[in-house]
Image 1 (tube, rainbow, N blue to C red):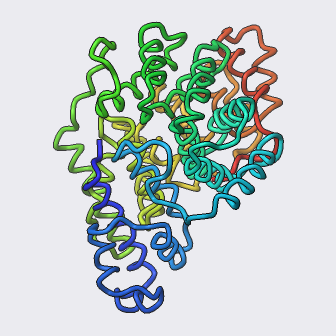
Image 2: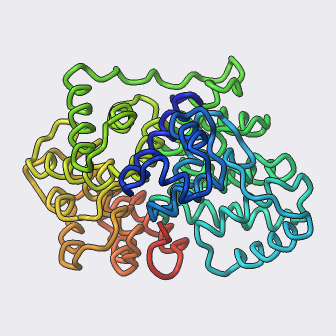
Length: 436
């Protein structure tokens, strides 16, 4: 699991990489942004944690939204819960209340972007006594958990951080924790395991009790998996009592061949854009092989926000296109977050000569990757040989309501599969995919 010092190093690499790729020397960037050369060096060596103003300066030259990835990385490293580690601009109490009430009203039926959720929960996290009703907190928590199952990329990260802020609030947290517990105990709520993930940093005893209960008596394998992921993080932070069932032992660390593969992948991608690999090497190793799921997710988010996103996606795509089955599932998971090209995943999803886990991972990846696949391909994937869980997930993520209804109406499908499709039809947000 990354620590604060390692996250500072990776943050510094991300900022410096974008400056170099934008063609700015340290001196020119300092002049462009009004900062001193010494401050720029401190940011890019990890000696100073960036503020929101610093992040915005780098975003202005790279044209990317870096804040979601940095929020995720710093919270995971420090175990902070409640307000964001990278502080937002200060507002007056009156401005905070006015903006909070406007966003709560918007969330109660209107469209909410990832930036809206970020704004709302950052405002709430700085108010120890927000004037929100229990109904409001349950509405916000319920909507966030539903949108988490239909968002992707930075949109998912922002909503996950927003949920963590609600859960971590000293006054609102117990209400949000209770609703997450109810959803996880609902056998028809397909993503029950995912809603537990926001409990990882909360020190409230209710959060520990919920995780312990779902470890002892999970309603589904998905809920058990989610509870175990949260338990690993809470044990690291000292939140769980000793009598709580221990998480499963992590898998074996990668051997030298896999480390060498990840190192070569990082160096090749960095070379493609004229950068030293630096912290990218450790990030690629973590993305593919870290036994901790949170560490893998943090690495993917940082790499997706970096200049290495496109070259890494291209080189992973090449390995998958060659039908090399080793680590195919992990490579597909990375590709889903890094690539805009669906063709290799589409071919693997339809292939009969690759192992079923790789084929199913390819189907799930089609749910996350930008754009959509032709109707004929989705129709082909409806065949019973396709992993039903992966198929329903991908259909839901891509808003394929007609095909989800076919799954619901098909008596040949398993009860669990039909229930999952019903859930998607019930909770699927209107319109296209949620913002990334």
